[in-house]
Length: 207
Image 1 (tube, rainbow, N blue to C red):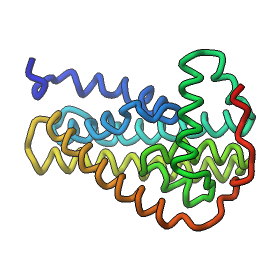
Image 2: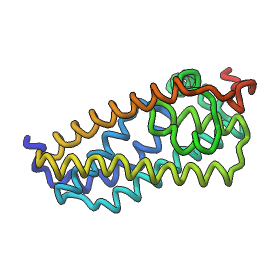
Image 3: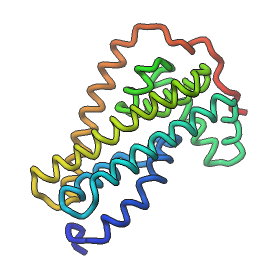
Image 4: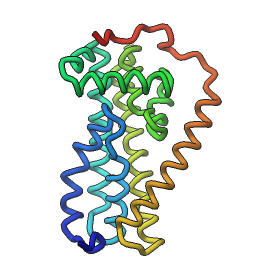
């Protein structure tokens, strides 16, 4: 099967963007970045509408952030523990909080999504810290737009410059994104000197 000439991928991608990007807000191993970058590559190849991909990715990112935020703000995270998969997700959330930190400042809400696990950790921490719904919603929305533009633009750029099949351009874009995300993560980790506003807040009961 020639994946470089599958015209149906453009249409199918529209249906995958929202569930994968929303799901990634709760379970980071879901490859939402891969899907969004692929959307950019498909757009460069004329198989998808770049503006629709941007809209869907940004909307799904915002929805996912709001779900996690309200889950922790209303202290409902224990609901996940009713199912085996939910307990794994809940454990992953605490692992992300421990790894990425618990800062819930507005700047972090916008920017942390660009580092692995940062989006989940920041949304959960903001809920625990009772950040205002309006403030979090606006920052999450701005961050979602920037995140979508970055990933779609990355896929579009690699697709239009390499002239390779969209799947090859997507892989290149993902590799570049991972490297840049890792570098940003290292920088953020080393510069994290401010005391977190929720450092002393107890995490939701996992039991």
